Figure 1 (cartoon, rainbow, N blue to C red):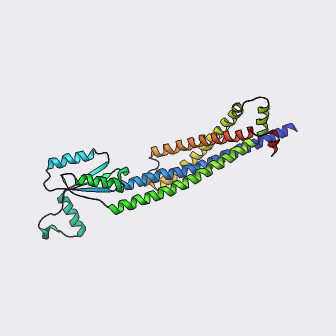
Figure 2: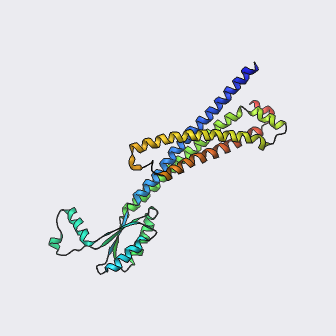
Figure 3: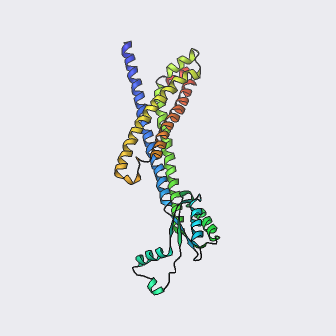
Length: 292
């Protein structure tokens, strides 16, 4: 009879461990998907920002030497991603092609100016910082005028802030759900051992001594869950990369590294905290309260 009871208890324990691992894996998989979207959306937003240019029109009397020195100085600036120089002659050809006729033939001279397109780093593509750059460049003796699409910058910044805000709200909500689900699963697994906890406590074991094996066991289960979640994420990343190769997910080792590390760290932190407070609860219960 005793062996049957022990076998039954062992099956219950294994079932409890299995449910904890599955819960952790599913929650971490969901968190990983949200993290992947967050990281890639940030990269996509930065990529869009870095396609925005601010154009500097040079004065006609600027010498070749001064122009080259100015270009070299711009290339070294902290805000510069890349620069493209367009001569007035090339600009005239491009404009003639766009309008479908040679406007120089009836104007007699080229009214356009030599221009430098500065493609800024994403952090500098904001209305405030671009306004600062415009003011700075207008004070330069080599520059006749500065041009960039202000309405586009305002709209881009506003939309990115709005999307980021709501996405962080969603991530926060699902993160809270993840913590609650994992915490509930771990508490249920510890609940089945509440009498063992109280027995150890009654024979003089310290709370730290009692808590330690439960924490290590939960961390191991969390590690298994994290491993399963990473396998699921790897399958999703591979599928997305095949469907949308322009995102270059499999080649983005930094993002994938951050994602994997985040899943493992979140698994460790949540399982440790959940187990600590779950065991603490049962350690603080009186003997007659264990039956409720």
